[in-house]
Image 1 (spheres, rainbow, N blue to C red):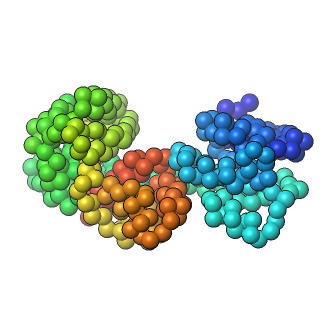
Image 2 (tube, rainbow, N blue to C red):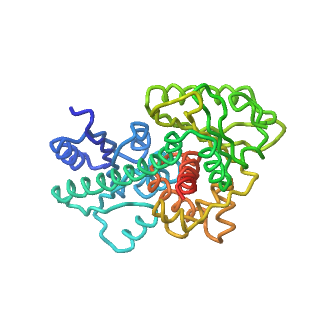
Image 3 (tube, rainbow, N blue to C red):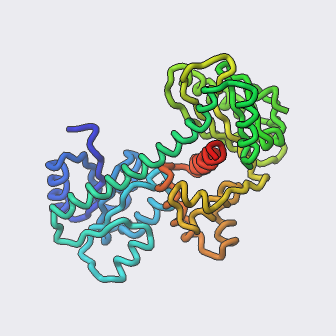
Length: 353
């Protein structure tokens, strides 16, 4: 068995059809896990399938309800294609499945050539989205790393002017973890905890959060020395009922480091401080629709999905649908990671402009 082959979760209650489907998939080189009903399929989601093939009319938990749970409760599977297998070719059934987040339909009796072609097309689409997101994160690193070509007071002054346009706090750390550059938004956060000491606090930050911060910075410093990549998304809890701070920490390419070379970039988001992001630029950078860009901006402001739904006058299901698209287009799996990538892209634009 090829361990690198895509993993397909096949949920079908008809045993003979399920066996035929799985035989065809394995013959084509896919890895397969089988489920005879929706509850069995839920238990297999921890295997992180690359594609989900699902019958609609299954006992115990039907395909529609399985799809709802996958899309609403498993954001880590946001970019996993969900394909219905159905004898129901009625227009209403197809529309209902699409509304709930199905990516495709295959009508029984299954045309196996069409099945394999559909899987290949959907997996290529996911691969393109992930490659796009990787390029966008690379832009963040490149935008900061160009500072290495001229480590001078003038270069840092120019960089700080660009970073001061960011609503998110940005701190660049040297190869010993020392702060080299801090933008205006980070100064307003009043940070005094190592490794961000020297920056005027993570007021009342918990000991656990402080340890997580140390560990994440150490990972990025090690990655920097190895010319490797490291990214962490953290939520730091503060005492006294204050809202959590969200941090995005990434290593920067090694290049030709000096004692004053930026080695780690730290982005800090306080949900109590409104983050002004240019929605048209977000739409252009990530391929968001106008509605997706609006929702992304509200998420970056620290607003909850329920609040966004009320603000926009739409249902929570509609917001969840757009959130799934945001995960897909940014190749992220968690809301904290999504916000970090959005802010990273915005930061890249600011530095390069």
